[in-house]
Image 1 (tube, rainbow, N blue to C red):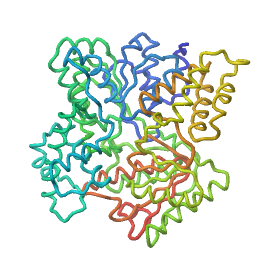
Image 2 (cartoon, rainbow, N blue to C red):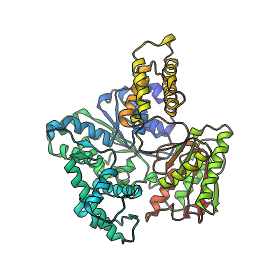
Image 3 (tube, rainbow, N blue to C red):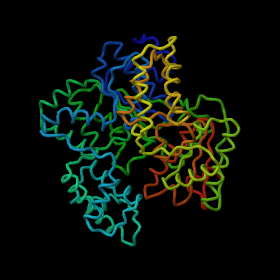
Image 4 (cartoon, rainbow, N blue to C red):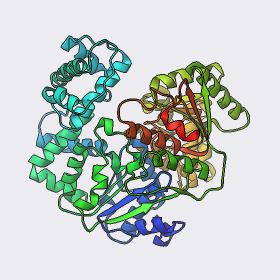
Length: 547
């Protein structure tokens, strides 16, 4: 049931209201951390549909994670708009590629790689280079291949372009930087050859092939442009040149586009992303309306002041001159503790987390963020020793777990039956009872409760949500303390936050000091009520402001 337009506009501040009612493009929104941008995006789409500006089936809302796309779809359903396509760039591209493949390319669609590690390992052997096939090494090389492909750099040109771009690659050998880049070039070439041999595509291939298909086939291009006529792009500061090229093809000469981003949260430059498209949006669309969201609803004034200062000391307070302003009540000042060793630091953090949980704080309201996955492994081990449940945010395929599939099978069967007493949530509890108190059961019930609170009328509504999430690999939030890299925490928030390893040589890491500072800023702005920063050895240069 559609929500009345007046309801869509309620409880919006003046900044948000201006964006939501600007339903004709082009529109550019500079949205600081915690300013309610997801709400603004979804309400703008709903308001445009209710106003007759566009049809829901003509909307394409793009973002960068399956979780963010899922949240947008859920919010739109709550606003009575269930048929909007909210997808990642890769998800939207692969849907189009799959549909048009028989017509544009012919034959069976190739196998899609969900991870590069296996093929990279084989490519190392095929290239016969002196590089150990360790997990960290595979991730490093896979990252370089992804960077090259989104910038459309071929294996033949990788070595030269990597040197020009000052790519910093750490491999466990005594080779020079140039030698290592040369070996990666060989592995990259072997990787592409192996994919061709196995008739396999990676996610970058999906974007490249979709671009090629649209550029070369006018018929396909016109059909897709007829399908999607109203665009929204979230996290626009993270768009790569290849993604922008694809967006241009989707959009054509039309101007019905709204982009939302924050240059201060640009943290994927190492992977080929650039904030230039956001910062130069007005150059491409001179008549664009530009809005700024600066009222912070997520964090306390103390946390927001800290975040502002992180950027201010390096003159990085957004290229648009925006500082966040908190409307929340005051809280604790960020706490900073140093330790002589990383082991002592991690032991301290694990103990503090246990104290918080023992005091009654829900473990799902706590997160520990670090710069690297190796740090998270150490933290998880320390929490395990204290019998504290935790979950590392990773690429685990939640919906491929046998127990999860079994639970979904029962939910699917129960969804076709009428609810006893009209209480479908109680029926769901009964359906999941044989699975005990497993983490996925808790996650399903929390998600179902949220759906019910937002107007979900039956179990079919819950089933649609989890099947949608399964398609997008967007699992529900699992119970326990969240462990995540700083990059992986983008777009998330917690009441209680620990930032660990803010030490010299760990953060900043690499040669792009400003990008690392923005990464620290993103980490700090994930906190709602309390933030605890720790370091081992010499503190990071980013902590000078706390002295």
